[in-house]
Image (cartoon, rainbow, N blue to C red):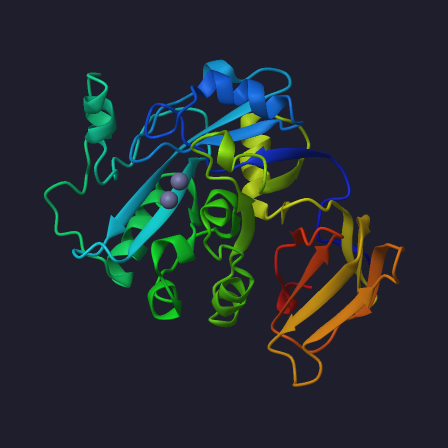
Length: 330
Ligand SMILES: [Zn+2]
Ligand SMILES: [Zn+2]
């Protein structure tokens, strides 16, 4: 029996799930971002301005979907570390907002705009602290209020395993944050994603731009496979992990059948399988193209492991990553 690990049916939509506009500290308007991304083949943008939830439903049309969200951060007192999370609304309404924006007012006040009551921080006046417990509570509040929550750019944030291993309940983490890479950070978080999975966190991985301006745009994207561009079709696909994270290569097909995994990609130089938690000597497998040639598929027998994930690497070193598959779900 074939089990599709990316859905058999539906369409792939190219998405950037982390973006800043002039509403916070980005330099382009939401409309300009829509135009520029659409010109490069994107269909979905999640607007995640800092600490401010604003809906952009008026931008959505037959060929474009605006997802509504925001990014929040909680830093240490000495500002050497922070935790940033994006929360993307699962429906296109702004009813029953969690009001958990830590500094929700600052952006709107800066622009001399009125601050809607729903945006005034629920946590204002509460004892927020940079601890795994507090951050996990913020994640839980957002999940319960109907958001898809992602953990962002650990390297930019100055975070390491003892920090992020304490965060629980998010849906996904950034395996790529392109703006942070452009700034010089080591924001290809393959090992951190492995660490999270081996710590038992069943999370997906996304690649994002976190664009504030053109300099940090069009480098990391998430391909979402959904029946349509309807808001809830796309957010359901997010919740179900029907997507992959890429800097360039495409993943066309991914399934499990009769004890083997199969993946088909655009032409790449290497495809690798990581078997997390497998015995020594069985933790990885790869197919590598000869010089001047390419590979486009890999079939590999399942091994005894906690989770399995695949990476395709093209000739420019750009990578596409599947979500991890926990073997007890097969
Ligand atoms: Zn951030
Ligand atoms: Zn950001």
